Image (cartoon, rainbow, N blue to C red; front, side, top):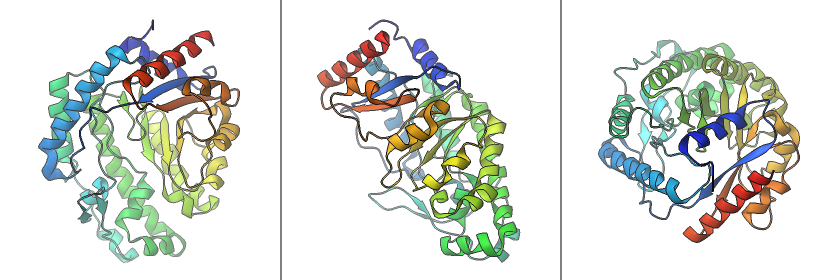
Length: 345
């Protein structure tokens, strides 16, 4: 397949995220049988995690030689959701066979005033910079680094503050909730400024793994439990601030948040959406947002071979297709035929 250099893949990702881009699609063939099991996402496993990430990066580089999709090699700095809450002092559950999870630190509004914003150079997140520094030193400064698991400030606040008390405080002491979210937002921006300063503005999203030439990506999962007024009061302003600060934003949401879609349209520079909520039908998203954003959702109504899927999406949409393959031969066939479809379009 012609036109498949690393630079050309970058260009395709950048073009399709342009809000004025024509309808089209990118495709990621999901086939990685060589990958070993990922070590636990715990600080004490940092050495094992570094070697796992490095091995994955080498496999991705090799994969580019024989599989012609839109995947880009990257240093996979995946983490759990607990990391920012832990920096504020939360304990962490670290079960043997699951992802880490933060234990709530705050149980009442009276505790917020005493909560201090951590120092980015001397908190529990420093080991993540150490890991990424070593990996980038090995790979070279041009290597893409996957962003750690970023939650919105309000979502992180909901991890720090015991959940039932947190939701009551949204109604009883909203100013205190906003105070906590502001502290989290200050710390999050300090982290992101340092991260992008070290590893460059271009990166691979925290989830799913799409390329961003600049901006920020994050998860927004608490919005399924609040009404639109609460979303617009507490969540939307901080999302807008992050989007403006970093230039654009991509959002993952695994909550049932259909009632927030109209409010999302008020978010400046929204570029990518990934919705995977309960009973989520991507076709509703395609119909609602159309070509306003780049869509990257799970398979739902597509039928037949993966190379026929682009013809099934509603007109006007820009879509990233995750196409599973069971064998190397199937992966090559899917990638080549999707490439042929795109070249004919």
